[in-house]
Length: 446
Ligand SMILES: Cc1ncc(COP(=O)(O)O)c(C=O)c1O
Image 1 (cartoon, rainbow, N blue to C red):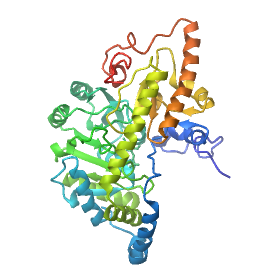
Image 2 (image 1 turned 135 degrees about the vertical axis):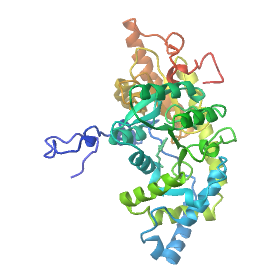
Image 3 (image 1 turned 60 degrees about the vertical axis):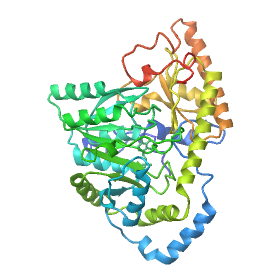
Image 4 (image 1 turned 180 degrees about the vertical axis):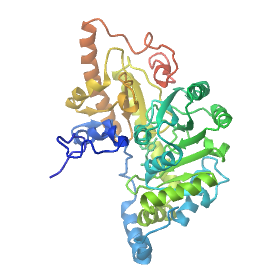
């Protein structure tokens, strides 16, 4: 018998036996959607899956077969808890593209995806009740980890230039004033998931300075940093401060997620504990996966591949931006400078979560903004991914979505409660959501 993990199991005989940290665990809104959204007739603007069709699988298959023949007993053996030394060396070439020039292979820890890295660092730093400062909205996978360690997440706001330093400092001060212990800032500085915004270069030193002032660690989660649409990369926070930043990145979005290979770069004390935590959690990351990734890096022009991804995702982002202008000009959004996502503010009075079943009936899927909050916020936003569908499908998906939103808007207007998302709904309170610019008035933004 197969179980859909999104279903609640009725009459679970273990109900009442679970640890308190398991009580709040539930399938993410994204996961619950995957089954329906992956039907071919549905245009899925929901998942953050990279588009892998153009990878050189034929040549790769031969090279992986050779690797197995030559080094099979190593590839299928247990490995080091810190990760394969050759791959750790290769990773130094990648992070140099974001100005991390002082790291050594010994500073790098390989993880089973960055998701595993987030789990390790939270396990290491946080007791129940400790505070993590995170951006508002926040990556849903990180929220799940933070919750499972019973931490308290306090939001700091973003605008079009990413995390606002003053908001970060206020969040720390507020927590300290209540006698709470702030353990780290969790930030996705580049091409944020879901907000699409990027922390400006000017703000980066300021954020680090505030973190140092209060002895708060910075956890920099950067899976999208190399996927810029502007032919440039931003300097990693880690490149500006090697003592107070734990840096995470991953092969998931720049090569492929199926191998589950990612890495962390950490200061020596934390790195040592990360290796121990990795060991107690998984013994060692998979040698086979790491050697597959190394085979790819050693034999192909991976920089060129990343260039190709950049240009493909850029065209898809343009297609989505232009379809939104055509079909949903009454919404607002920041046009991202890289990555996978547009964070769309819908007109006031509409509810992205309750509208979703109707969208799926109209054969288009998105993620409701509510998935990215621990509270009941986010009903006024949708996360639209442009990474996976082709440009034609994106345009068709937005057209379908607009019919649902138009219908919904007409219904709400009938009762006289709807107002456009632009203009009066912007209350200026400082979140990335309400600092977005009206796409119709400001062409550079949306
Ligand atoms: C911001 C962010 N962090 C971490 C991850 C997890 O990535 P990985 O596949 O390396 O576990 C994702 C995946 O979507 C992400 O968007």
